[in-house]
Length: 258
Image 1 (cartoon, rainbow, N blue to C red):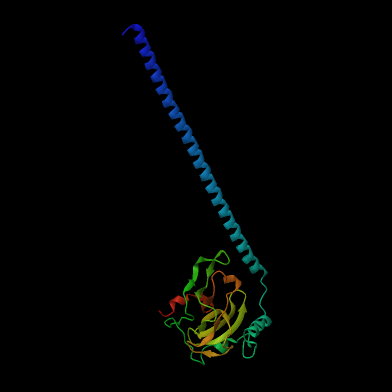
Image 2 (image 1 turned 45 degrees about the horizontal axis):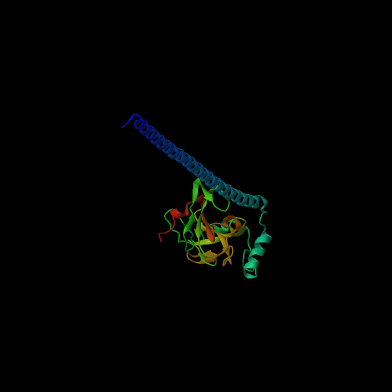
């Protein structure tokens, strides 16, 4: 092989190596460009997802604030329920106020529990006043969440689920102390069971008793009504509150096992 041929072969080798280097560089540059585009696309997608999530959270927050403000405004604007209002409510229930809610204030001696031998005590038991599950438990040591009001509050009663027109029975023997129509709990019947113990039954309609009536455990007091606006999200329920000397106590401590 002469010198010219050797020189030509060397040039071809250098050219081949140069082409290979250029090709490798092109591949690297193409890969880098593709990776940058991929990362940019991923960031764009993540930013889009985050924006959508933030928009949904803001919408949920707005809806919650609107619901809360409506309920709070209703609480602020609520007018006191008068005797005439309650009579009208009962008239709407059965067309008559006769033998219904005719006594609005009861002398303490009327329901003292001596004449009817009302003697509820620490060891006494209560029947379940309605057939349902506990939606909200009694809680006076810490606040619990009220869905309708979107607030945390103390709960002096048990909120027991039910269906409209379900029977509500007396949980223990007692005298009907009062029948009231409250904004929060609707038509509410209070039974004096003796020894300072009382039970309040709220969210009722078509009450079957009148003030001064004596009820045995299991007697029907009335029927469940559509809940008031303060419990609309909780659904149809019985408001069941127990008192001892005017202070709320936990009904669950006295309820018989089902």
